[in-house]
Image (cartoon, rainbow, N blue to C red; front, side):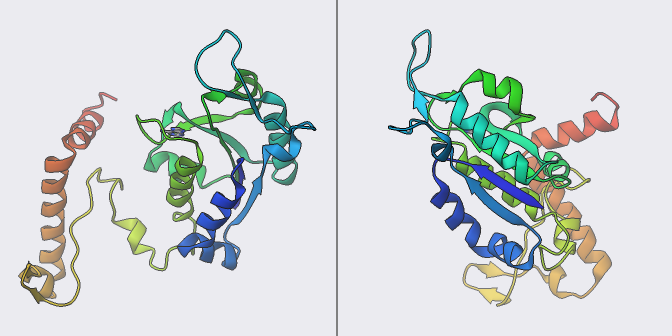
Length: 234
Ligand code: ADE
């Protein structure tokens, strides 16, 4: 899978993607990450990538021309890719969207300042994606979230495919059960006896009970959503 970031902070991307499982996924060839800097497509002598908005208002707008040239360049190296603008005005990202994104090469346009020229959105963007109802200082950190969630679904990226089979936001609609490791006893508490029992049926029942309880306590909205789906309301 080819992933391209369009950003005026290329080092931010390179250092984030070099670490941990994203670094390993690059070394194994499961993903190929590249970065395009709009400043490289800006005009001399000042190589400006932003300017004030027409009509007034706060902040600066990312200029259309360097962004359009960056997207054209990225597309020429990744012809079938989806071009995704990271913006708080986009559709909210989810595990389902991560599954969809994992089927394509991706180009992330990471905005900064107040936003990007609308003509870029109308002519060169396939999807607009938000990671939640809050405003970050730019799209890079948001794109990192989307890339992590998407890349971990690719075959061979996680060591154990069971970690994808039973997890939060799987088809049960429940959050994950708590997990424990050594030692069995700590001043802070013991590992639940059932997990030490070796009885897989009892363990599965315990995990399901825990998942229901945690979901009810932390995310009652997920239970409601699942019930509505079951009753055919959504
Ligand atoms: N850029 C700034 N805030 C953002 C958000 N919440 N999601 C995606 N991109 C963003």
